[in-house]
Amino acid sequence: MSAMRHLLDLCKRRGFLFQSAEIHGGLRGAYDYGPLGVELKRNVSQEWWNSMVYQRSDVVGIDTAIITPPAVLKTSGHVDQFTDEMVDSRLSKERFRPDKAPALKLDDHHPQGLILPISAPDKITAKVWEHDIRTQFARGAAITRKGKEILLQVERMEKDKIVLKKDDRATITTLDPTDLHIPYHGYVDPNSNSPFLTESRPFNLMFKTYLDPIDPIDKVITTTLDAQKTPSTSDLTSTRQLVDKTLHPSLTYLRPETAQGVFINYATVQRSHPHLKIPFGIAQIGKSFRNEIRLEHAIFRTPEFEQMELEFFVAPWQAEEQFESWRKFRMDWWRYYGRNHDRIRERPHAQDELAHYSSGCVDVEYLFPWGWGEVEGIANRGDFDLSKHSEATGIKLQYTDAILMQERQAREKATGVKETDVEALARERFTPHVVESSCGLNRAMLALMLDAMEVVDERGKAIPFEGSEGDNNNTNTENTTVHVSKGVRTIMRLHPRLAPVKVGIMPLISNNKDLVEMCTGISQSLRQELQVNVSMETQSTTIGKRYYRMDEIGTPWCVTVDFESLQDRMVTIRERDTGEQRRVSVDEVVDLVRNGLRLVPRATQNKQQKTISV
Ligand code: ATP
Image (cartoon, rainbow, N blue to C red; front, side):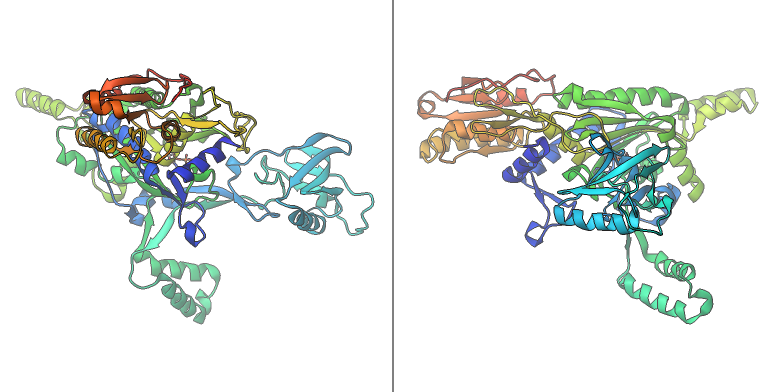
């Protein structure tokens, strides 16, 4: 079973993640977080907030509206430029992003020579596709079909085209030789390896919505019908312009990122918090929406997702140093909560990937089962955002160094001479530059779960996942499948602070009133004193099975109450990562858990589970 399938099965079975609206047939890309998922997600976002806001004196938080007026997103460039290129596969009609699509795969070991294999989902579809290729996309080409695979013989590859071999038996007399020249731009349909594609075209990712009690479709119909009555407005472009004009007063967008809410509040936050001196940051966690061309890998890419973003405002001359320091800070965060440090890396953007205003950007990437994928972007954005909003509104979004200003004013008063040194004045008042850290909460959660998940055999020995899963234009083939057999079980080695349940409390005999009563007491103390999520495990299965159930959801500690506990008030505490069991006084439990949850370097990192006899 693949790592991703294994995780998604576990998520569904144990209540981390459900397909949304499943009882109504589901909605692609929409997920609901179950009782454990919601805890894990809250913990990840809380750890982010702790490190970005509570543990620093230079960052404050904010929570801004999701529904955003067009002026904000026009100014930020999203209305005109927040586009991805989109391509349609002419065979499958699937849409995809060419920048994420794989390169063509050819088989050069085939007895028929160089072969371009196209994989259909099933045999019937393969027949239909073969017919489409023969009659529309490559008339006269040498084609064979083997089950779900359509095999095209390739004459040669040129820089921007694939030249297919002609079928010598073809009876087509009207064949144009260019029918066998297939344009190639470096990518193919990710699912089928088909090079039969439409031209790429830009697609704006923002969701529009209309704040209006009148159904916008009624307005569209009325405006269109009116436009058709006059010849000068009846063409498509003029009608579209009239429709846009009619809808514009009520047009709004669902924000595609949380960052703009921070930029437009730069001045209000600064005025309300005058103690904030540059450099300082504003953090926000919230939902963002993108009409993604291709939804993929469960919660990795969804239309609705949460972002954890920090905009750190700095003086222009501090930007470079602050960018470097945030890179390090964020990588340290990832390494602290992740176990496999070789699966997390920084990827600096190449010059041609950078936004025109950005002078540096790195993606933090995790090695997912299908290859490296971005989990966070850290960028040195210059003064682009504040300058643009300032230009559009006429409101100065600047920072004034009050001390420098007072000192200058005092000097001017003393000397009677107005100072005009441009450089000195620019250090006193300037438009701040921004260093941004933008992390996807759902993606972070997926990465941290995959990172924590370990499958072990009956002796507790880790079983590696084998083989590669999918192809995301990544050459790196991680081990991703494992054979699940009897005795094999999963341990979610989540950092204790992320674990959805901190302690599993279990009476040795689940229906014994005295044992249950003592368990309830322990659980109450933990809930009240530490405000943590604990779970009373009173199923009538063996303690061993109950421990394994707790391991599977990442619970770092289990506490077992047995008959001796009633006499000596000693209980067994078991650690998930080592399997170690100790007898401790019931009065120590809260302190042990409190200590275990303190922010200290992971002691048990990468340790293997020991075999335990229970
Ligand atoms: P990608 O290249 O994967 O589309 P991006 O570069 O567009 O990502 P950013 O705009 O930098 O992403 O957004 C910051 C973070 O938000 C990403 O690193 C990712 O973790 C998260 N994110 C972006 N789009 C999505 C999405 N559709 N679903 C889930 N998380 C997302």
